[in-house]
Length: 556
Image (tube, rainbow, N blue to C red; front, side):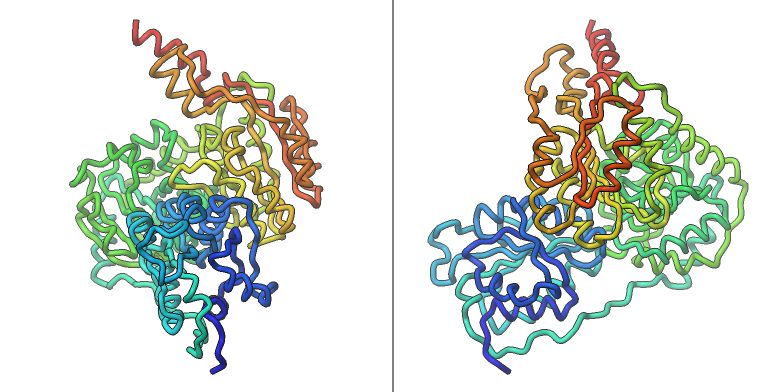
């Protein structure tokens, strides 16, 4: 085998495993990798980002969208710490991701050399696995394990540190020759028999689905079973895009801003079949909808990772199986029971949530989102970061089978713009719309430059109300009229976007949005639409003044 340096071997191995895109910010600590990437453009592209946090968000979102690891390269020290937000987000999203970090040479380790960090310690509680390659001959072994760790079981981020001398050392070790294939764990016949028996005995059964790794076939199989059996299906926090929201079996999502109808649905269920979910805080309304550790509801928990079963809630039956394999085993089955009204009432509650009053804002987001529900194509991708504005893509959009939502389980601000860029990198032909608050947008607005350079420009809707909305909401509820640290003085977003080569407009009133959006759709340079939103319209059904008055009344 020809001698080449460690940086070249890393790139060869990633290509063999199927990597086609990568994101990053350059650094002298991994120059050998950058040099190897010089020869792979068009095969393994490198998207040059403006900040390591944005690059890591892009890799996390890419993994979430495609199911294959998002690849990110950053330099040591400050580069790695900037990127840590994307690692945390990928972990909570259960998204496959590989973060490669430059490291000081092995001859300097332990001396607190320039920008030195112990990456195993730093990322040990955040990533699924953190390791370091200190021998060029072991590169294929470690890369193969990193890829397998990121994609199997509960998917997640892996951090691989790359000492400088390891990257420049010469080796004749053969690179990997192809991707691995791992079959999804399937449920046993006895387990399926127990599931069907338990469902048939229930009076108020509920399917709770979520988690990563769902395929189109798996989602369709679950939908077929649910519709044939007239069972209600509830999505976990920000996983509603994995189930057809137009199906009569779909009854909403359990997440931030959970409706009273949804809370009651979970509490009143006598059997919950949970598939792929990890029972996070948002899905359980702060772990209040089910008792910890033993729920009052009978619980069947299906998860691909044995470490998730029983982690929070003790199930009556735990099944280690992949979501798609489990759904495939259900597809041709049918259970019957006296729960038709239970399912129908749950669906009616979901539909009723879309009926909104006129909002006290120049641009009414209820009407804007209603327009987008009808206008966006069947394969559209929606993205968002964090803030009260996320209620619009999360609660007031109905996702069809081909549409996707890229939104952070971790509640990370600034995720939406990088996620939208990653979606356009992965699928340039798809319509990608990012929802961003004015504060959220400014966390990573510089990544518009990444989009411009990569030719991957989405449509960005900036909901500009001049405040950090979520914090202001809690502030008014806890300390009414004592405003501190939540008012924003913003730049001219239209001029800023135009400087990055975007078509940009400010939309002053609701009736102007439709025409502006059509111009955005027609633009070949992406678009930024700044929407004039009143701070009063902080939530769909309660104004800022009403929150303040209610808090003052409670304190009187």
